[in-house]
Length: 440
Image 1: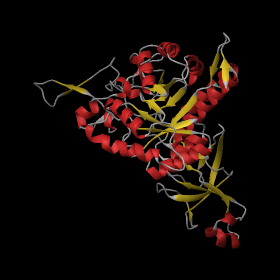
Image 2: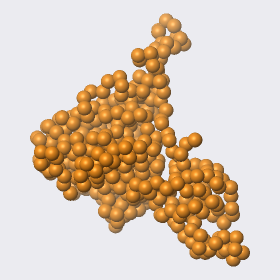
Image 3: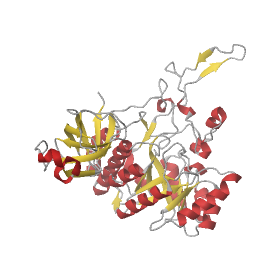
Image 4: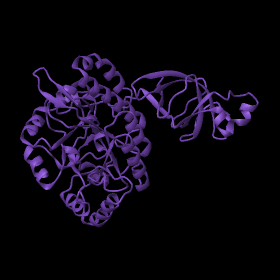
């Protein structure tokens, strides 16, 4: 699909690329609007603390995504050491041999890993990670000559610089750019602080996020005396950036020639992924229907994209270098308006579920009553008012009328994380609907 700006120029619809930390989150991303998802295996990605995917989970996720017309990209973007290479080669071979479906592309930053992937899996599509510091069109042309299909732009680029890159590279060379999520204090995410402070290498996937810590100054001759670091007398979190959010600038991103709009967050929950994916999905679709429709929807986009964890918003480097207004100086906490309760895995009539047969027989439960199965993630109780979040963008307020455990026993609350439950709600949800509750 294409859109035209006021000057009559046509632009193609960009891909919406969503992160997934687990199989559950991958399915959420797919159902809530992703065109593609990016995931990490159990090694060689830059999110070692994420749940990540076993080979079996990856296979199931790829099959699910492909069945819905969604692509899957696998990250292998560490800066490799000698000791990583043999195992990395074996990993690429496993990915190549995966059946019945394989990943659509690998995301790589290290030239050595690039060459190794090419040797093992000759026809694999390779995308160059932002970790490779991709700041100019000659870099894009270099990677194209090496056989890369796509390059992820450095976060430090402005829209003007990205437009200039687009004008100097072939049409078939793709540009991917981050448009939403956490910002890193280090250049293109290549952090050295984590390794220096803790011995955990951010470039090997073990970042401890020192940019969110509270810092003080210590004078050499006065050990133990911590002097606060002030920034305009507002606080001490001098590295703590606001989160990127470009939901209000879809036309500008499209006009810059970006092929894939990337959401950050491979350690985020299904609630975060669902909220961000469906908001950007609607914003992109609305814009390509008409710019007027996109402008009319702006308040909804702003409201919905805030219904997940975030650190206030900034436009990053897209309109010039950030200044003091893009940092948060007084705390390192998230804004969190909603709590994630679970995803609806199944919806059945009570009479179809064997553990409720006796209750139905005794007329303690209507056999036609709809019950929704979830694996609960946070506590809620009978009588609570919660919200059903649907992939189509609608939100439905409902009350919890009853909660049952897997044995069919009625319970008043759901206090145990990951406990499978059957819920009777005042309005029946559908499979893959997400349940959440607003913070008091």
